[in-house]
Amino acid sequence: MLDDVDSTNAEAARIAPDLGHPTWIMAHRQSAARGRRGRAWDMPRGNFAATLVMRPGGVPGWAALRSFLAANALFETLAMHVDRSRLSNKWPNDVLLDNGKVGGILLESAGQGGQVQWLSIGIGVNLAVAPLVRDAAFPPVSLAEQGGAAVAPEAFLDQLAGFYATEESILEQLGFAPIREKWLRHAARLGEVITARTTTEELTGRFETIDEAGQLILETPAGRKVVPAADVYF
Image (tube, rainbow, N blue to C red; front, side):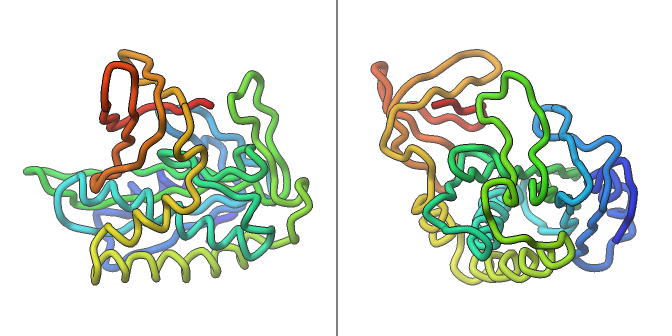
């Protein structure tokens, strides 16, 4: 537990070389929090920021599946404090509340020889306050401001860690299939037309599913497209 840090993912990278077992890092304040593609993540006090750093082993694709484990765990934790019908999973790494972004997930890793040496799973949740973000496709919302039950960050971490441990056990024993099925049950806009913007193109089509590697599958006018990474809009 840290009172102040640049970011929990940065702290995870610092301790990872000496890591002996999976470790959660939580901070009350982050001075340089970030999201995907280096985007800034505002972290007002009272909100939640934590990172799980671990050694999952295997190739990068196997480690990357933890984004969906984390999303399932975050969904279930939030569902303890607000009606689950108001929550949804937005591919690839957000959880929405009333169609606004309440939480996000950031994976970072390091390795060599095609093998992952360590993985950090950063999770940020707007528990108390929704930061002001101009021109956001999915404006931030907070659990408290949307009428959810009040919860302290420490209690939220206890709940989240328990749900995540369950997801990890399922992955180890049964593989990714049940994780994928659970994520899809709560997927935002499944079966509807969405737009995926990659670094090189924009694709619009029906959100068909995610595959066994967690990639987005779109049925477009030009045929079936497999999207490994993108920002999604709808």
